[in-house]
Amino acid sequence: MAANKDIWVFTEKTALLPELIAGARNLAEQTGGKAVAVTLGPRQAAEKSFEMGAHMVLWLGELPPGRLVEDAVPTLAEAVRTAQPFGVLIGATTRGRAVAGRLAARLGTAALTDALEFQYTNSGIQVKHMVFGGGAVRIDRPVTGPFLATVGSGVFEPLPQASGTSGEIQTAVWIDPPWQAVVVERRQREGSKVNLAAAKRVVCPGRGLKQQEDLGMIEELAQALSAEVACTRPLAEGLNWLPRERYIGISGAMIKPDLYIGIGVSGQAQHTIGMNESRVVVAINKDRGAPLVAQADYAIEGDLYAVVPALIRAIKAHKGK
Ligand SMILES: Cc1cc2nc3c(=O)[nH]c(=O)nc-3n(C[C@H](O)[C@H](O)[C@H](O)COP(=O)(O)OP(=O)(O)OC[C@H]3O[C@@H](n4cnc5c(N)ncnc54)[C@H](O)[C@@H]3O)c2cc1C
Image (cartoon, rainbow, N blue to C red; front, side, top):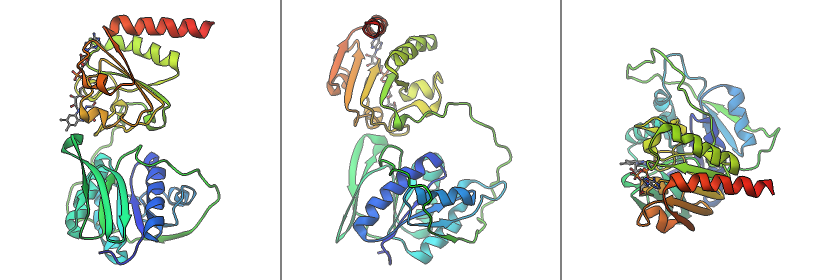
């Protein structure tokens, strides 16, 4: 197993870094090691890791022009081989998954995907993580080290930021990857910068919605409730009615709001794994046999085209009192 007890974190997604650092801190307290942020990008961003709770930073520098995030794997692999941390938590993004797989192959260790919980005992680490696209949860105990795990947003709560905190920054020497893929063009993806993981109330339409125009009614309900609009995956990938950042589930956002309202959502496991920590779940569905209805605290059986306008009227009337 690993020579030291440090927990490293790596993600190219700035919004996820505070959550991963919080998770690493928690785990490092159990192992008796340090939380180390491994960062790629401007040095000022690396320095910010201390305010998020990192004990130490390993700075990989700026990504060279024409390079992809996964091109940092040889540099990262060399750093892991040298320092032998106890484990590495990697952001479960598209790029992060590519990094985890390649890193695992290079280090001859396993990458556990979509981790939900870590438990450290004297005999090692146990990782509870999703398998079969979120259809099941499995507990694994890695027998070779360092353990690698991908972690999505919403699994750990960020720590309160402590401004002005600083610490040791080590610099890694960039190792060019042997493969030849280069970036030839970058285009900004259209989409919102919504942070669903932080939302207190979420209104989530599903395929029960007949047409894109009907999202207007959903937005009106969200506005009346001061809620964020999310969706199921088919609405964001396939129908393309909403940006991909807005879908909830195993391959989307993980949320823990006080209130989640599923409107015309069946409640398949790949979706509910992303919202089943919501405090209060409301399902609006014409089918009382839909799995989300069984999981809901409150279910309204009926046609959403009658229920949603009635809800909007009732909320507005209540606010007007
Ligand atoms: C590998 C993999 C990963 C996946 N990842 C995700 C993921 O991250 N997130 C995700 O959401 N999905 C994911 N999926 C897809 C998932 O399996 C489901 O297909 C999807 O969640 C279903 O979306 P839905 O509930 O909107 O649609 P449906 O399952 O079609 O449900 C529509 C619901 O609307 C109800 N309805 C219809 N009309 C009305 C009406 N007028 N009034 C009231 N109710 C009505 C129906 O009774 C039904 O319950 C994934 C699938 C795979 C294979």
